Image (tube, rainbow, N blue to C red; front, side, top):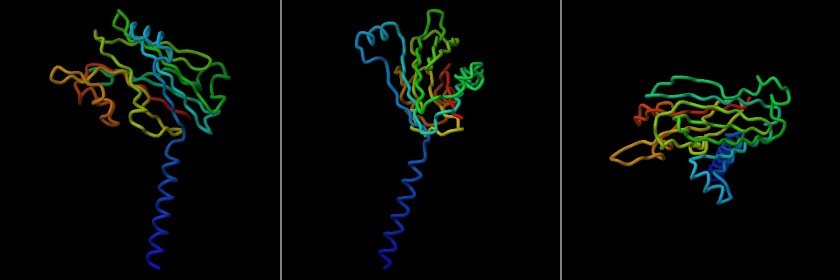
Length: 206
């Protein structure tokens, strides 16, 4: 009898754990990088252009707004925190919310000759272009920290989406993964790894 009760308790605990895991993330994200066309991929690589395609999906994503922001971090200090797009403040009503259970976003970026990070955020019916000051370095890399951190994306909660970073340098070598996989304390990467400059992008569905 005690054995049966133990089995039932373990079953209920496993069921509860599965249920909590299943409900952890309200939104699913799928990422694609560069291009499936090898010739286009060669051109992107030659020109130093980074291209990421993101697809967000969720049963309740329709009629939600979205807010994308960026923090510029210099010498370990947040120097600015600004909005890329807040859909609810777009003057065109049809663009204020998502009209489907899927939202596609494409990001194109590169370091210009003027030492600026030039970025284009392409949403289904419009695009937002931004430029950010950078240091003179060809080592900038756009990283999908939401994918690397495997954190859940839930409605009404901000989450780290992307980071445009410089590598961690040690013994003459440069490391990106050591930074990217260092946990959720993204805004302290500058202090922890001695990174001169990087950008952190956050997003929220609400």
